[in-house]
Length: 153
Figure 1 (cartoon, rainbow, N blue to C red):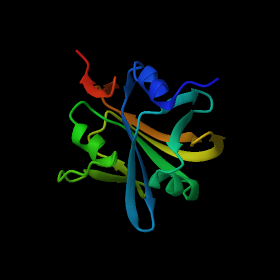
Figure 2 (figure 1 turned 90 degrees about the horizontal axis):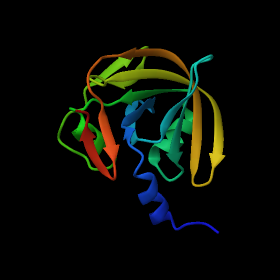
Figure 3 (figure 1 turned 135 degrees about the horizontal axis):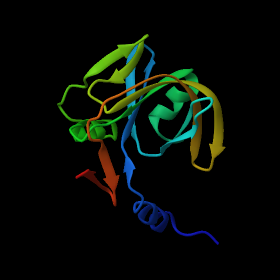
C-alpha cells in the first residue's frame, strides 16, 4: 500500500537540501531548471545524480544533451531559484560559459557533468553523470526546508 503523493511530499519536505539549477545549451539557447533532487554518488569516479520529472521541459533537454551543468545556489540567489522553478522574474540570469556550457555566475559551486546513464524511476528519470570540472566558493548556500527557503546561521 502506497502513501498519497501529497503526504509523501510533505514528509520528504522535512529533509533540508541545497538548491541547484541544472543548466544546458540546447537549440542555441541556454536552458535551466531548479532542482533539489540532487546528490553525489561516487568519489572515484566523481559521479552525481539529478532526478528530473518526466513532464518538465528540462527533461527532454537532458535526454538529448550529453553535458549539463549543476549550479549550487548561494543564499543571495532566491530569485534565480524561483525563476527557474517556473516563476519568472525580471532579474537577468548571470550566465557564464565553461567550454560552451552555460553555468550560473555567483553560485556557491558549479559542476560540469558528462551524462553516463539514465535510469527510469517512476514519474522521474535519474540522470547520472561524471563530473568533468568543478569550482566552489566559501559563500553560504541557499537551503530549502518545508517548502521554504532558508539561510544558514
